[in-house]
Image (tube, rainbow, N blue to C red; front, side):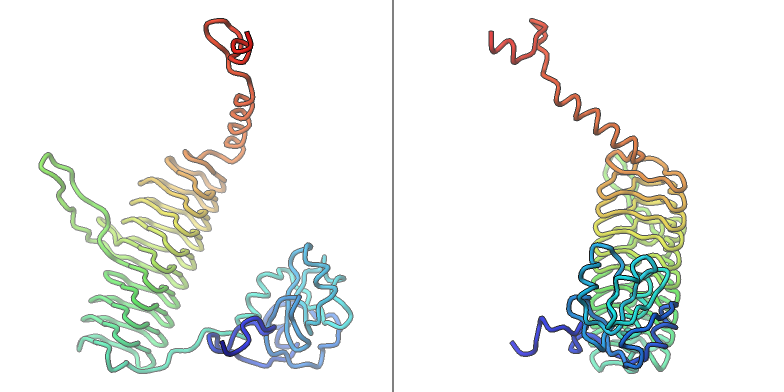
Length: 363
C-alpha cells in the first residue's frame, strides 16, 4: 500500500481539501481568542493534528483535563485551550486561549479543511429535464437525474446517481450525496443531504377497512430550512395534510426516520437509528439519543433531552430529561431502577410455609 496511513498529518490530501498556511493572527481571529506567547508566534501554520502527533507548524487542542499530560509533551506550534488549562501548554507552544475550545477547534479545522467548492458543469451521463433551471455554478455528477421544473441555486453540488424529483427547489450551496433522492421538497441554503438519504417519499398513511388498507394520499411537502443536515440512509416523509418541516440548523444522524407531518424546531439533534412517528411537534434545541423513538402526535418542549433507546409515549415538557421505555424523567427512572434492584436482592418467599424457598430446600 502506498502512502503513510498512520502519519502525523491529519486530513489526508487524497480525500480532504486543504487550505493555508495561515498566520497565528488569522487563527486567533477565527477562533475568537487571545494568544499567549510561544515559539509559534512567527510561524505559518499548515494544519491540525492531535496533541500526541502534532508538529511545530500544526495546531492542536486541549479541551479535557484528562489529556493535560499529553499537552505537556506536545510539539504543536499552537494549542487551543480554555483559561483553566492554559498553564498546561508547554513553553515551546503558543496557547490560543478561548471561551470554548471545542467550538474554536471546529472553526479552525474547517478553515484548514473547507468543503470543496462546486465544479460547475453537468456530467455527460446526467439527465436534466429541459424545464429545469440550474445556476451556471451548479455541479451535476455522473448519472444524476434532474426532473421537470426543478430549481437549483448557485454553488449546489448533486452527487453521482442522485435523483432530484420534479418541482424541487434548492437554495444556495446545497450538497446532495451519491444516490440520494429528493422529491416534493423545498430546501433552504446550505442544506446537506448525505448519500442514500430519501427525502419526500410518501408518508405511512392508510385507512383500515374490513377488506384491507386504503392508502391516504400524502399531499404535503418536506421543508428543510437553512443549514439542515440529513444523514446517510435517513428518510424524511412528506406531509399528509400539511408539510413536514425540519427547522434551521437541525442535524439528523445516519439511519433516522421522520414521519409525515412532523414539525421540528431549530437546532434539533437526532442520533443514529432514532425515529419520530407522524404529526409530532418538537421545539427548538431538542436532543434525541441513539435509537430513541417517539410515538405519534406528541409535543416535545424546547431543549428537552431524550435518552438513548428511550420510548416516548407522552408529551415531554420544556427542558425535561427523559430516559427508558416507557420514558420517564431521569431521576424517577433511576429511582425505579434502584427499587427493582433492592427487590431482586431479597430472598423469594414460599407461599406455603411463609419461609424463603432457600429455607424450604434446606429443610
